Length: 311
Ligand code: UDP
Ligand code: MG
Image (cartoon, rainbow, N blue to C red; front, top):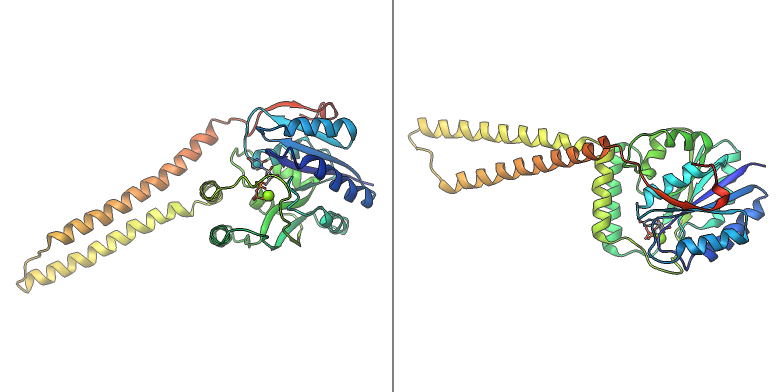
């Protein structure tokens, strides 16, 4: 019998906690494994942590820790992983959009030798068209950049202790869990699941926050955008060369260069390229600034007694 840690990042999920505990307990009892359910309260503004504490008082498998403020889902996942003592960890959403009924299949694949079981969205559930298009575009580009097919991936995963330790050893503050678990390597298998509907509460993502998430993750994983700067520079030089030759040819044929609008247009294009490039470089400088400060990914303000000594 092995110990399995279930890690549940939770932000404003007071209505979900009890239901999630009973669903997860039901599934885990049927597997015959020992287990712990670690809720990470990510600075909720409602009574999420109170609900976690109450659940923990009734059920020794339930454990919880609470952040001093909202640090984001990525931080919550990493805090859960570092508090976990399981031989395997399963990360899943508190709203049960990641259906717990596939956990036994994940465990089976793990016992058969898989070191990471990657949950792959078979259907994306009910999402707006804009959300779907944006997700498709983002993961299409990310897949090209990191050379892993990210399109259907999610944060729903089972990771062996080896993988968890490798992830916890990564020093960066800005993490991208979904892709990092591929980056660290190990024997991984895919497992398809259908995204369920959220029963209580509502999603925390807006198109704006998704956009920010996409830019941050793309740049934390790749320096390709910086190469765009070089490309734009080359493009301008070549275009300038062609224009120069054309002007000279015209000059020798007796037609002087003319065209005030051309000058304005060129100024605008080149000015645009320069500002875009500075923006890209600036973004990376900002990221470096954030990383060199070496601030912790999260700050824990309290935890349930059964997590004593884990940090
Ligand atoms: N979450 C979190 N911190 C945040 C936002 C979300 O821990 O700042 C958790 C949330 O409680 C849930 C999971 O991340 O367990 C997924 O969030 P949500 O359901 O809002 O996202 P969606 O399913 O719409 O992608
Ligand atoms: Mg959700």
